[in-house]
Length: 140
Length: 404
Image (cartoon, rainbow over all chains, first blue to last red; front, side, top):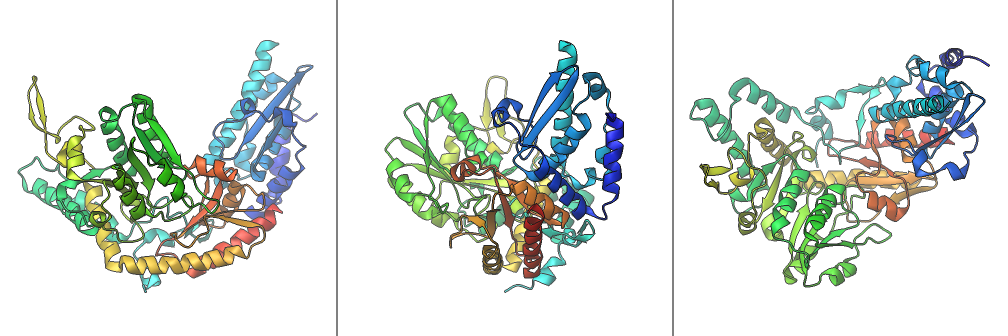
């Protein structure tokens, strides 16, 4: 299992291949489409993340000190962005998730292509992921 | 018709680049851009006569007061208003509506009913809901047809004797639909109900004569009319404005203050407490001058050609749904394509340097009506061009292709 930092570096390498924003967006769209189907029972308001223009649901489960995240969105680009976050965070223990320093978003140049509203939405997603991790760590 | 390329030279922001491509600004229904003729007035104010109005005897204050009051005259003339004092400067449409809604608190009782419509902006819904919560009055809603227009027959049946007020938008900010406000006002008056028209979207596109309309209150914002943000006006008939209590206490709005009793100033100062956005109000006057120099008839005719051209070309896109696709509308097009989320299309258009609005446009009830999460809204102004629309249509097609 790769560490959170190794996964981020891998994403940065992937995005370095792209020549321009259209290719980056196309990749996000494709990632969004290939994100596994979300359990419809988890599409509930309490799983909604505040601050996104589109609806984003995030759910998590905890087993053997490992947190698994799953998410969905009604907008495909948001779904692509979440799929990157899931790839980075899912399958790690709460301590690693809480301590992770997320730098890939800036390094792949996504920041400059996100509106303030979108960027805030992204921050809310990361915050929610860390809140889940914190809750599991405390419970443990 | 107007010379659009000459006009564009007046707007410095229109030569801006976004992602190395020329900015295409199609979010005019949210905020219109500002010409040099208005920007220069703001800068001239701070360079040459920045001072407080109505209170000073010195030359700067006299200059500022005169220019500030000149805007009131310009608003009076432009909107066909009978008296200067019927014009209250506000921070915008929302402020104007709140002056009325808070003023009505003591005048509305639990027996009374208020009418709004399903197509209203949240600014013309929430203040009335708050008023109803405080007074126990009932809020009734005129529904819309599938094409987005108001159901006027339903309005007629909602107009019962207990209806004290009707609050309707001149033009829907989401759909661009022009409402039959003259008919709405006349029907209300026959029922002895008063009418407030939310003119945020209407005032920018054609000339309106408020005296002929016989409307009781009309509110609008300068930033939709090439003016600055944070400025607007409330028009009200004298007797109605006189019957309302002041909105805020403070300086300017009083005639006599002792610790026993304070007497309020006459209109319009009663509603203009504190130091207003002086530069903004003066610049609003310059914006009206600017638009009148182009001519509202020319603006209206030209924007119609842009609307028709864009609508005709958008309709050719597979699986597009245009909301409010009717004849009586201004240059606003709200649409969705297949089941793509509006924010996906909007994000990709932004990468092409095209500014449109996506989302609910502060009109959640309309979205609920059509059962959609939002729309993409393109809104054109007299400084936009057909070639910009060509690039926009092209970009929409590319976005759809990318989204697959």
